[in-house]
Length: 298
Image (cartoon, rainbow, N blue to C red; front, side, top):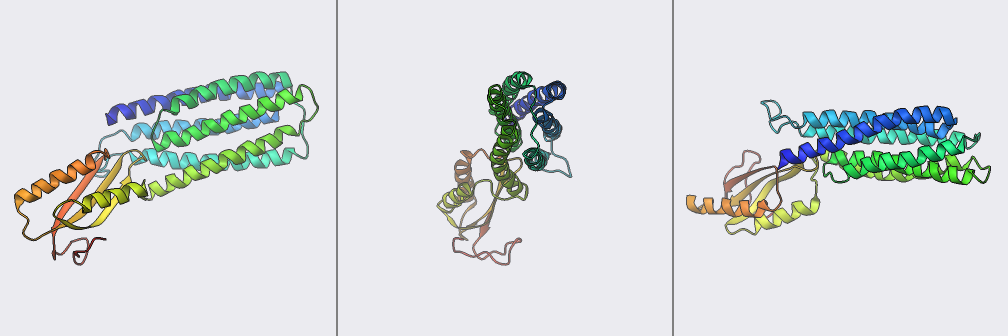
């Protein structure tokens, strides 16, 4: 199942990459023919998107390699690295667009409006289809790439609106104004997504509520006195890892321990965790990861 999901993810990213690269070339030609600085700026931005998506595709393929003696969990976190880099690329690109748009407020130029309209319709269609393909993905990489494409769609919508208005009035300043508005909107969401990616990359819990729920369910199992060293982190935003030490009574038999392990498996089964490591310790036993096991719930 995980291999199928990963393969589907790579296919979606490959589609997005092919469409983005092809359309970026069209943008450069169209921007030159229409004398539109907005389209040329978007072409440069799309070039950065194409590089980011291509890198995500390569890193995503690497992440599917099996575990080794060095990368004992495999290479899934390479996909998370791609999500981080892509997020930073979007932020840098957004800052550049804002600088360019603000500078155009002082010296706006009238482009070839008919060409802008045609390219805007094509831009919405191409990027919209690519975003639709990636919208089915659940990995952190695909979520970040989706914001790349959403930013592109909003950019082309803005260009379409500006071109429509410029068909009737001579207000070229609308172009940089709308560019600033949609760039700020997308930047807000990208920074939010980037913050999540950084947290996951630093092995923060992917879901604080999920962590609390698992703690409560494990502590409620018969024979469990307390739980410590409970860690939940994510390989790539989709595949999670859980480890925990459960403290049990001194007189627990082997058969009771086996029964408890089965109960733990039933509790964790619904969360579809990629890896789980559960250790049983007795009350008063020295924990090798701590000084002394305590009996109260933490």
